[in-house]
Length: 222
Image 1: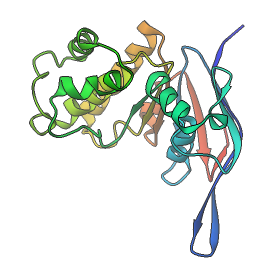
Image 2: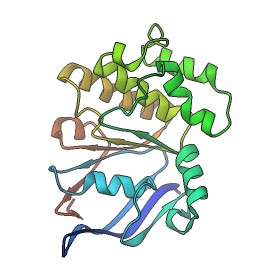
Image 3: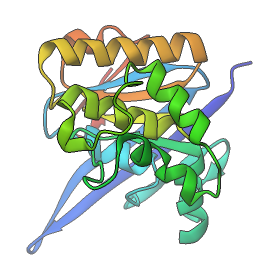
Image 4: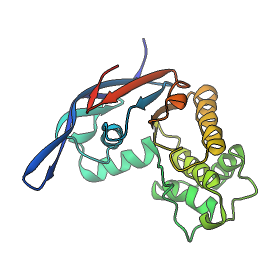
């Protein structure tokens, strides 16, 4: 029997704009199994990134529940939820979110330091695996966009998360670096059985994952 890592049930999300309530997500049911790589695919504005933030414990749903390993994220107190995000969920962002005054190695180490781990060796191994062995002492401003995103990926993996969430990770990269990054995601999923949820509006990249969840107008349509 397959093991479900992340489950959303009837997730809705609305935002207030002036006097108007705008519904972004309209009842999302989703089950993600351990070791699975899925793509949330759809046009800009469909609600993909909003859903990913809710799945990752960053943004509370207006209605509905999200379960990580059977535990309801939004019944947790803020401190407990922060600890879960740090230890159990890895995030890769479109715009890297690296600290400019820290080296690549130091940026990767930040989540481990927050959780009280001594992980220098693992950080070095991750950067080596991602082709950045000779860039560890470089700061983000000295790295290309593709290199910065791979640093961001290493940072997301440092605490060995149960699930990796990537929000348009190729959106800020040229075609060559984007393809390289997607190949890395596929390799990590295949060799390490890392569970991955990838948001993209790139149909070519979406087709490379084992399952596509198409989202349009705040609903799963396929």
